[in-house]
Amino acid sequence: MNDAVEVERLSARTKVKEADDKPILLVVEDDPGIQKQMRWSFDQYEVVVAEDRASAMAQLRRYEPAVVTMDLGLPPDPDSTSEGFALLAEMLTASPDTKVIMITGQNDRSNAVKAIGLGAYDFYTKPFEPELLTLVVERAFRLAGLQRENSVLQSVNMALPLAGLLTRDPAMLRICRNIERLAPSDVTVLLLGESGTGKELLARGLHDLSTRKDKKFIALNCAAIPENLLESELFGYERGAFTGAAKQTKGKIEYADGGTLFLDEIGDLPGALQAKLLRFLQERVVERIGGREEIPVDVRIVCATHQNLKEQIKVGRFREDLFYRLSEIVVDIPPLRQRQGDPSLLARAFIQRFSAAQNRKPLVLADDALAAIEAYGWPGNVREIENCMKRAVIMADGQFISADELALDVDGIEPKIFNLRQVRDDAERGAIMQVLGKVDGNIARAAEMLGVSRPTLYDLMRRFGIR
Image 1: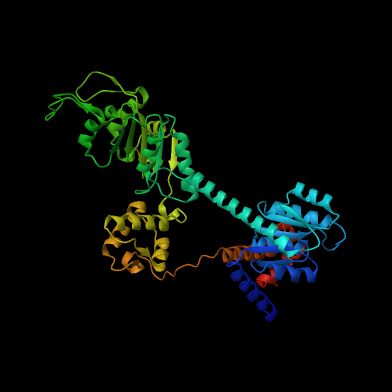
Image 2: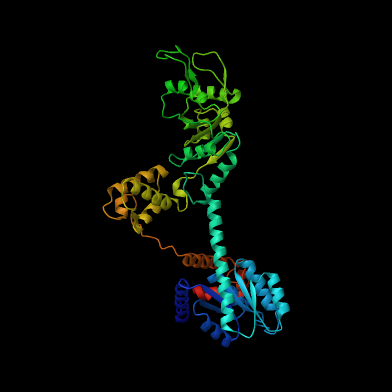
């Protein structure tokens, strides 16, 4: 890489750092004198200058400014407004929320009206008066800030998951929306996922958001009860049905009448009970052990398992007809290791909860601890991270929790530096390199594939040091 390219890249990095401290104002102006005057007038902003349409679009994509001031007369024909209007349309297509302030001549009000009609935020007539234009720019920045805050609030409200479920992962949020849609119906739902992924929490969500929410939610773990007791737990028994049956007892299905029955680990249900459960699902009546009476029951069934039921069917451990009865709707729950950002989010939440429970000031996860949390696979999912954070709060000596105190099995993990500009630059550099490879260095074809102009592509290549 030659010295000129390196100097340009260092200068760009310095600009980005400064831009992080001040709002960015993009000035599209080809007159050097006016450029200098506007830099001086807007010292409260990080002023980025572009001289023509191509450089303006490059700066817009690079800095994503909230406000742009733009002269209508731009090269290659400054006496015409065609290039200015074309740039306005291109800018608003690429960034609809950007506030573009058009600068027009004194007798150019018809073009100003046209610009507003095309989507410009405001217009300002020459000659240039810093105080007046500053008011227009400040108002545009305030409006952009308010709209950004409103957008954030709306996204937060739209992204609120089910009560008790903490996530920001897009896949989990979609599952929450699906649960909300399924809840009002009586469709049988099968929840599939590893142990500790929140299957019971989603089952409770189906109940709490349904018309049955005022009735009982009964949960039964099919793997936790011995086989000889499971039938009586499910279907109940009459007095004298077997030794020890001293009184008539309802089963879980009857207790859930009008509400929801959650059968966890349904894959561990014994074969004989699978047939009896299938009959109930078909007929919606139960017979207690030792009884002859058919008892109608109105109950919604929600099941869950960590096992692959289709594989269980192949080896004869699970009835295929029962599977199709239970799987009217199947919800696949991703493990924690596949949920973007959730391990750190959950870790912080559990730290706060357990700090309060231990009457301690809220503890803080150190950078190396957060790096370890994100790198670890969490085979026990949410249940494991909960136990880990509880142990860390109890054992912590100071205010900070380090990776060593978490005792996770990860080696050589360094804290990641998350910088959106760096991530974006890396993505752009990778895309350009990939496309240039595909077209064998043909700049025109590469620009067409990337959706940018040739000057913009050259500008990006210079910035990234690509020859």
